[in-house]
Every structure is written in structure tokens, then in C-alpha cells.
Length: 115
Image (cartoon, rainbow, N blue to C red; front, side, top):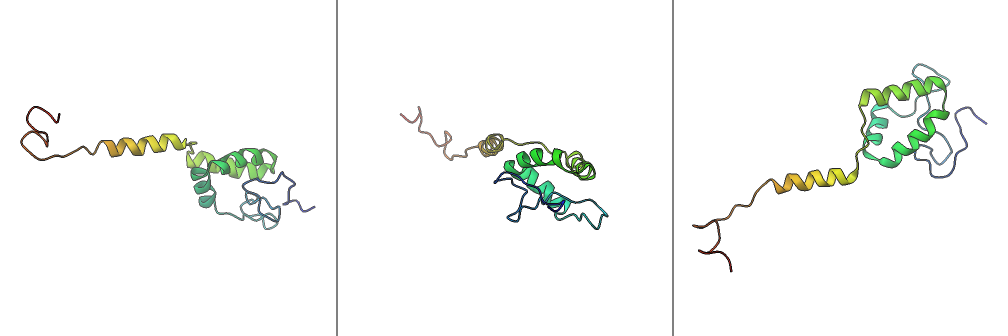
């Protein structure tokens, strides 16, 4: 078995159809080339929760030099696992701050209310 191919359960986010771990690779090592740019990895980790979970499972089983590279990415990227509910709530809150603009002498209501 090639040192770059690992046996993992089906469904690991960073493992391609050929069974290759796309996180593998060390800067400047011709025998263990980097296959995904650091920016691509960071983008996936920020946007896709499944990629973060898979990343956390795979990295501890990788070569020490690979772990150093990938942990450096995490430290440099200041990744925060964002809960989708928090993002949705923040968006809705921003929409609620826009305000309602009505015309008329009493702000769009009839004298004495709308009843």
C-alpha cells in the first residue's frame, strides 16, 4: 500500500474516490506533494461543517510533518466552527434593523389606530 493511501471508512470528506487523502503533503517534499492549496483547505473548513469533522478525525493519524503544516493552517486561519443557526439569526436580525417606513399624518395609521 502506498504511504499516501489510507484505509478509512466510506464517507470521509477529504478522501477522494481513489482512497487518497487530499490533506496529505509536505511543503518542499517531492515524494509527498501537497495536493490542495492552503487557501482551498481553509475555505472548505470555514464553510463546510462535514469537512471540519473529517479533518479532526484524519489529521491525528497523519505524518508528523503533515500535522504540523495543517495545524499551522488552523492557527493562522483563526477558524471558528460557526453554527448555521447563529448565521441565520444574525442575517434575520440585520434585516429587522432596516425599519418600517410609512407615510401619512400618523405614520400610515388612521387617527385613533387601525381598529
